[in-house]
Amino acid sequence: MPTLVAHRPAVASDAIDDVAPRYVAEPESPQAFADALAHASRERLQTVIRGGGTKLGWGRVPAAVDLIVTTARLNRLIVHRHGDLTATVQPGMRLQDLNDTLRSQGQWLPVESAFAGATVGGIVATNDAGPSRHRNGTPRDLVIGITLALTDGRLVKAGGTVVKNVAGYDLGKLVSSSHGTLAGIADVTFKLVPIPQASSTLVVAYGDGDAMTRDVAALAASQVEPAAFDISVGTALEHPAADDTPDGLYKVQLRIATSPAATDAQIASARAIVSGDAMVVTGDVERAIWTSHTAAPWRGDAAVRLSWLPSNLANVVALTTGMESATGAAAALTGRAAGTGLMRLIGPPRAQAAAVERLRASSDIGNVVVLRASRELKELVDVWGPPRDAHGVLRSLKQMFDPAGILNAGRGPI
Image 1 (tube, rainbow, N blue to C red):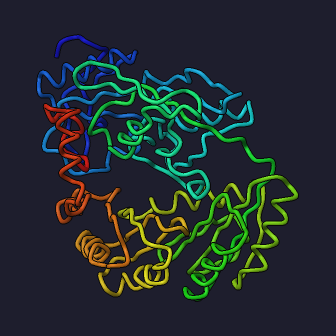
Image 2: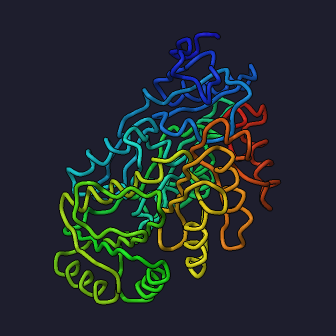
């Protein structure tokens, strides 16, 4: 491989689904990033872009990987415009490090990840979002500007650096959740939000799924304005070990984050609505509960992303609790009450595959994608599912951005 950028031979820890790459390139500048992709395109090298490596197991098993291009050296906060509530960041900066830095100005990027090593580029490329999605949306909704490294060696910019400037914003949306199949992210500009003055979480446990779904509907129709509004369902769930919150097969966690007075008033209103066993937590206990909740879907054998209409929640709950008897795979659902979440599966690969197919066969559920899976499970089901109506358009975009078809080594959705 010509010395276009810093590179090294791959080692065993660089393997993706036990497929060993040949080289790992480590560009130190955005242009070097684009140059590496251009070289890979000319030489037809099957290439995977890697950030923190926390999601390398997502996607199909590659037939071959010639090159990994890592963003590890592109890890700076370029500028924080705290007066405008925006920041421009290189893709290899860890989300945790970014928010630690922004905290000095009382601001944060309102995204949670279950993975401590998750990078800014990775969360945009996968559109990885946590409980704060309820109020602030996903990374796709927070991107206002982006610079892409293309496979022809160019760097292209879209969008702006202030929230009111939205020219080219759709290019940022396009690469969000593209899983590195279209281009490399050289930098990204986000809109930020202030850290709230106060925060409290109402935790409610139920022994009956119907009671939970009734309360979710009542809370959604009320004047309560949560920062996060999540549910947990299933026998495979593990609850935080170090708290005294109510325990049950079904749970609601509703977080209010605003001024102290408004937080107290909203929590009181929410508590008056719910019928389950309720408790209010704050401080370290509150943070620990949300951290455990965000990590819960990744403690099983497989993790499946799915969505549903809020009106179908009762059927989704019943499908989850009946999964083990129907397929042999125990299931637990963690997600946003508004209709998207992650299902954890525990059981043999064939039982997991049966669970995935059962989800895909349900008229109550849409967009079923297998994220974390063993190689055995990936050989039994397509992780992305059958082609959707927009597949032809996406293939055309892939041809336009990556005509040699080298990016993500066939692992991605297109």
